[in-house]
Length: 232
Image (tube, rainbow, N blue to C red):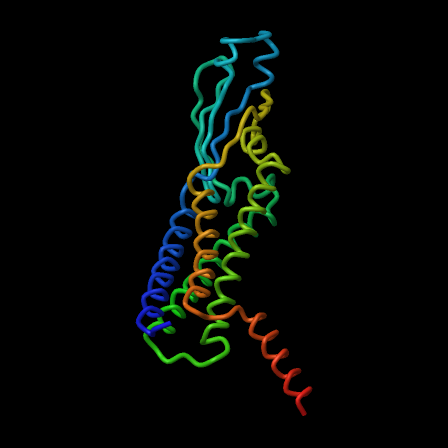
């Protein structure tokens, strides 16, 4: 493939990586990771609410990795509340899991930045073989894909398996018990998924530029060595 086409492909991939850096950094700071609908179970049971009456006991919340806000309802009107994971909720949430999500988001930003730099270095510089060249491009993007996947899995397990929404709503509640009615992942969560797809696309762009997968190159090298040994 002509060098000019490689430069274009690597430049596009570099821009995509830079976009991933900005997207992940912005997503980390928002409170739009989860939208939750929660029922005030205690209040609904006291008045034996059903049908349209349940709306008086339905609360809602949005939260992210660091903070969130919501509205509690237990038949006595709206009660807005705001919360922060650090340090307020660290004693009640699965802290190690939550910190791991933030850690891998940070690692994702780092390796997306590295991928961006290496794409432009390969496009306009004279890269060495090994980690500065094609192998490095595959490696950094694969690590970024892996980190994005880990963020999605760990955060999903924290929300679904550890009932994060109920922990948030029941924090410092002495009289009422809240039960999750519904949860859905919001914009920032899907932006991380988009980052995962983008790095996967970059791996395909590297291949489109005519660069073999590292393992494929190793197999071809072994095959040619074996053929040479047979000739001798």
